Length: 75
Image 1 (cartoon, rainbow, N blue to C red):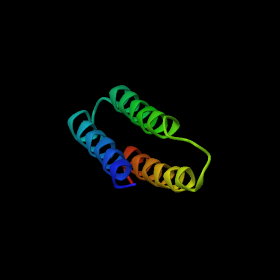
Image 2 (image 1 turned 45 degrees about the horizontal axis):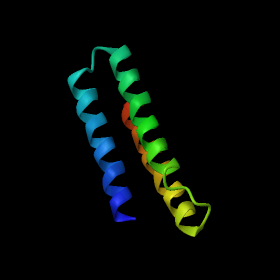
Image 3 (image 1 turned 60 degrees about the vertical axis):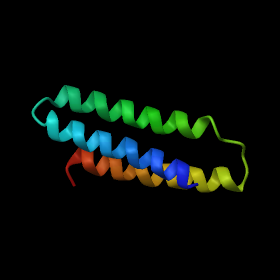
């Protein structure tokens, strides 16, 4: 699970950096947001085996996606 948390954290940090760099360019921020969500989703989908680990992984992904949305919305 640590591997996935690290990957999700890396995606989140790259997005935070992009938001700081392109704060004034809303279109670019939206594009980065969508790409980050897609990257998290594809990481999850590659390892979804419908078992208890997948449930924990889905919860982890959802948690990081909520954090990503908060950064995107500036909360």
